Length: 200
Length: 205
Length: 177
Image 1: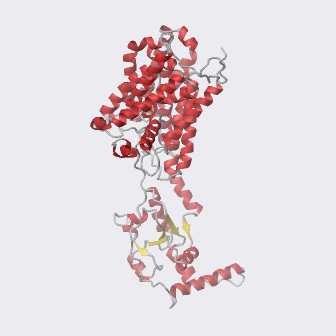
Image 2: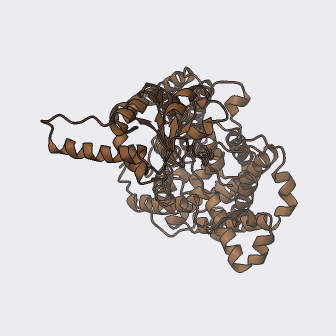
Image 3: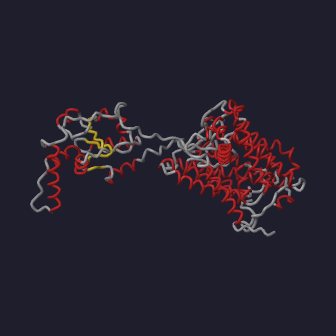
């Protein structure tokens, strides 16, 4: 039963090898999707290219469904799987700062690594910027510490919070995602910028 | 456009199926009923009396003998170095720590092996490992090690050798030179607690 | 164009839904094998913590932030995410080579100079780096992996990132279109 490595207490060396291989797949998928291009990523926010929406939500619902099916067929112990910790304030404000970083910088950390790998110089600078951002956070940590640790709600699931079963909640997310895909397709027609998309 | 409709229908259908899944939680440490039965059938969860005798003579420290018969039977006669935890109290809070551990190999001893099998199954269902059943139980111990039956005249030589070995063990356990006496009960020391399962640390923090 | 994608043969990039399913399976494999999702900013933090600890060990020890990651015996670079991000780099490189996209460029809108693009990338990166520490993960670690496990943190971070980017898109339109 999964997750294989923690359940079978497999050595860290193998775990790191798996990490590298998973990263390989991650990087490959991101680059193939076109996430190594900042103008393609930014297209999401102007409607001319909604690849980000499609890839992001397809990936999320694929993994979500996969986990539900694995759980149903008794192939994974979900109590071992990491569920992100929820600190209300820092999750929201952190997300807002990241959103600003996204529209200004045109990448997110994962995609910038991909873009840097294929020779995008702007991605190198974005990476350098993110290192500086982390240093800035580290140096000023004492100012934010209280805020950073405020309103902790634990490893909370949204389905638990809404009092729905995981399956029903996932179904609602999927319906919402499919609706968004259709809206995305319409937006690509409405806000088409062939001059840009041709170049990418 | 058609492909899009098909894809939308497929993904929503998968979602609808998952919506009907009951909310259940699996436990990776607890084997399924088939796995438990397989463990019993495969024989890997048993130890036979000859192996036990040998390890006792060699003072193998990894074995921990738990006699689950009632106190009366235990006081009458018992395997040296075994401790008595009667079946009824084995799963009580005071004693469960002996089953739920990862330091020793527990050998469960009952009159025949039936009760020990039962304990093994109950323990496996709770996810406990490192428990083994003495094949044939205490009866087998008495009938093969303490009073070894003489092999028939036509028996092959290997059986004769085994018989001599058993005779020697019998003397070891019952004879005057015995290192153990039946009344020596090891002062039970609670073994190291089994590592409990812990959620993976993840995320970027 | 010289570009030719050996996977799709038609367009330069893989079909987004197909790429999404591929990415979803990678994420699922990560959960099934290791019990944790994907991430990126965590590895950058490891690199930063290591650098700070080399330059000024005392400072790192006394900081409430860096010291958290220096407590173990191993260097913070000896972490799962560092190896995973190395994989992302190599995976991106392989994919780029596969599809004929390896090229040194600074991609920017014709409305701005490449120097301006670099400044913006630096500022954007700094904001993302700072935000990812405050929000405990970036788009991959918090939003994507978090959503797959249905965590509240994942959905909240996702809405906050994309909501803000949409809200600010108008003000930065010159940089992109």
